[in-house]
Length: 418
Image (tube, rainbow, N blue to C red; front, top):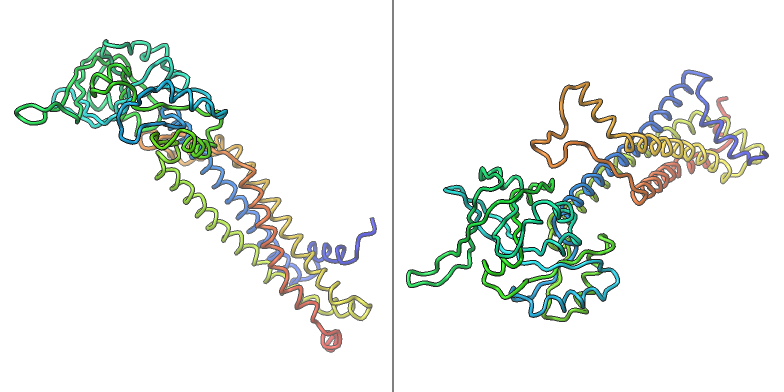
């Protein structure tokens, strides 16, 4: 094809480096710049993919226990008619299922051992349509949660810390006690442990208990469920749907979605991901601006060539275009190589990390310390495209000044000593 001569010469300069010692040195510096861009882009893709993987794993384990949206009365009392509240919420097309609940902080005790926990009174059948954990336990421990049986299901870590096994008795102490002549006496009730659950999230496994909603109403002396849990068709629209429900349910109903109930974790993850992106983008920027030194050296080395091209009629814009092509080509090669390397590692990190652990005889994520014992990865195009575009823009900006200097070379001055 009859390509413009600026592209042909720029591509030739990019591949140059075999002629003399100086050319080989310039080629080496250019290769280092390309390698730096590639490694920076790859590191950015790998780190963000791993952070996405961790975020997805923790979020999925969290949402296996809690609902996407909760509806409660502002004063914390029982809802006057929870069925009507659930039916009104179900009018929103984003709502998929609803279930009643009662939740309160309690002390769970066995002998002298006591632990703080959240007791959640649920209706097992309805709950199984709202949370994945209840769906898994529906035909197991939750099937034994019947009204008046005073059965309880504990998180595995909570049961272990109290030394409990299935069939043991456990006492639940409610902070809202009964008033007597001796003062306020905490309300206590003995339950039978019928099972445990392991959600994979330490906060819930060590601090949550499930009982039947009718038993919870008797224990906490309320007339009915204090809230309604909702499952949405799209978990990522929880905040948007929550705002819609807030407007439709009226001022007497408090609406809280999972991003607000876990605001500290949610906001921390977003800030951390944003900061890691900025830090690693600076690495790409440093590598991209190494192209400046490469092009400045190339311009100095090619002054005679520039002068000859100018005397043959090349315009300053054409000269500038030649060196911008050279720099942009290095940026494109580095960026595409980095994307390929980053995606290769990100999609195979479940193979690469165990191999490194075996070689080094170590474990990066011990199961006894972390929630997750394997390195997760979730590459997303929403992260990759901005990385590619940013890298290309930085590489392009790095070519402007050296190319401008090349266009200002005066033929007479450049050829004086040739």
